[in-house]
Length: 536
Image (cartoon, rainbow, N blue to C red; front, side):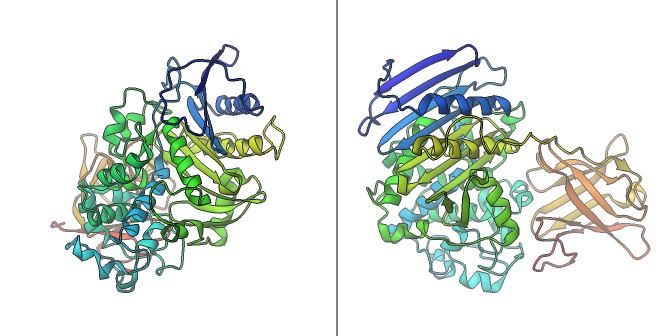
């Protein structure tokens, strides 16, 4: 085990580097020494990543490179917003949606034991361990949907982030997600869905006899891979003594954000543990070892494309994944994107939580993996993607290091909320109690200043705020904007009025960009509808 600790005043950073040999992962890191075998690409790569980090104002980051059995770790910047506490290789960061690969591997372990099945319809076996399984709104989807569909975003049920914010528990959310109509038929469109990974994690926990997904993933993934600093829940992360505080003062609001779908994005880890995880995945993809005892046949769907993208999504992901840096032939497997980078097949998945961004990037043919943790928000995703592409080039010598050829764009300014305009009807016409089959109760009232207020669902922390008409619209417009918690986009409502235009009968709500039809009853592609349940 070799550890190099350096402080560079000119760069205003504190760095820790670890080079770990093929059998050293179990050894304690308690030795400080220079390593005469530091790879030639290490220092230029560090300088380039740190320059990019500073340009994008990413407060802190840590990076792991795993190549041919050796692991190189680097910590950059600071873990606090005041920039006084250096990041170390043991500092914990949230991983966001990199969690999805853990959830998929947890499901694979259940499949390997015969407790679940990739391609058998869920309706044929899940009632054995979940008698109250709610199923899906669409009959065809309900009859035929499989675990493989959940893990490859092809159920036809979109992401529906607002629904995730409405309910207090995973089970109450899942009982209501059955009321969400599809926005596409089963297996016809890739639609990234945290909700479906929430369902996959919940089912896996039930099938394996664990109390919840967190318990299952600890036992089946963390323990065999010796991930001692990795945590499965937001609450555990918030208690870590050495953790990044994220990108802004809003970060500590995150403890509730993914409460009901922790299997889609709640895992946190240190770069030391992240490197162990990346190494285990490399071994499994290459067939060098089977550290999770999954078996090659069960693991095969991780290697094969499960869903491809339409033209619009193809363009989006091409520009984002590895920052569009020599990528092509993109698809999605189980919890991982797949594509070509130069002449290599890559697998990767990025992740975001409020104030954090991460990336897991694998080149199995080159026996190379890069893992990135950072205190950044989703406007700074370029750092995580550029870090992987730059590290790939550095280790393989496929491009000279220096100024990035695919430099990150400037961080865009956030768009301000539209200014309020006059309401088309008297304020009293909008108030009352309304009910949705999907999101529950909506209360519309008036505050002391005469402004409309709205509160939706059980978890009103995220969907409580003011409700107003945007300025500049026609005076007859009934479109309203709900301004909820900070860092969330506006919620778009359209009021339905009675024949005399004297009272609001309900509110249509855009659940997802693929669900825009105006419908009073649920249907494919329809907006949600909050129907008045009190006397107007």
